[in-house]
Length: 409
Image (cartoon, rainbow, N blue to C red; front, side, top):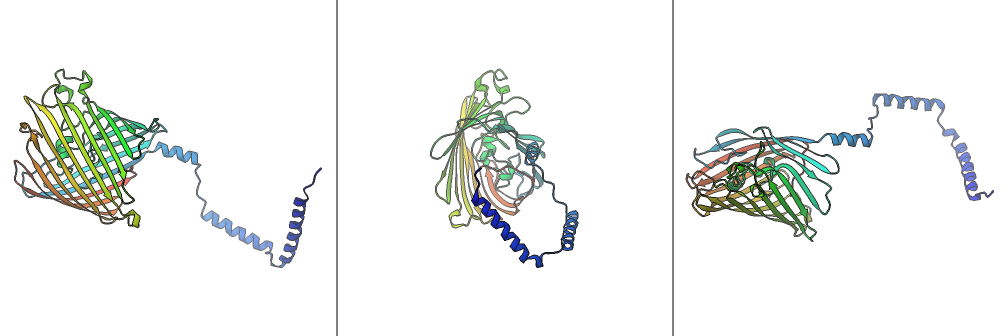
């Protein structure tokens, strides 16, 4: 049998050293009574402060998956107009003097499993569904799909919910070309992240327009307006496409640029067409390289053009807005915006959103007491072709409670 003499020698040395040390320190070793008193004190402390129960990671994970992120977001405001005839937008906008509940959004979201994510937004103040859809999480080749009822990926403004707005009202082009709230409907979406040196995402969507959850659109008609009164072909759906590019110009500068198209039925002539085209730019500067990330300046420019067939003619109109956002620090934001919509050609239909020219200028200051609250003051001056120039003031308070998902850039 082979013996590890090095191991045996080390053990022997340690034993001798331990004996020597114990003898040298024997005089300073506490007595049994001292040990008993210390143990009793520890037990008394433990009984007064029992240790927290540790939940196994597997159980905590299962419980977490069964409980989605839930939040409630309230937007309440006060409006004043100097004249009774002024621009009216409907939806979440405040259109009359006095108090208003602009929105009370109930949001729930969760990753169902490694393959699907669930998202829902319900508007309690207006009692209607805003969005509910499933998103795939594991498709190959940089593909992703959505199925349900959701806002169309058209431009920057349309996908945004009320609590992400920088103003108390949406741009005039949003109401005229999209919807009073959102251009949305029941449908399916496929998106693809292209393998290019910069970020390029391509979206393709198809929306139906019948049923209880019908299409919401200021541009496109529903199947009852077709000759057959129902969907009898692929031409009766509404199609939307978007290509968005993102460029990190430097550590401090970033640029987002998108182009859009939408095609569907005209709401004025059965089985005729309406086309919608748009482009948007978002340029942001934040001096991260100097360590001052509390400050930021962002420019948003969005334009839309529409062709609509009407009885015996077609109308081409357009609109857009330019917006500057100044984040002074974490608690103060100042915003200015210029809006315009008008006709390019054709004979407008009186009493429809194809008629008239509109413009508006807005300025707002927002205070954020915390991450969960906003207080906003806004002043507007605007004019419709058929109305005199008007002035308006708005006061808005927003609070949110609960967990809410991150917003897109």
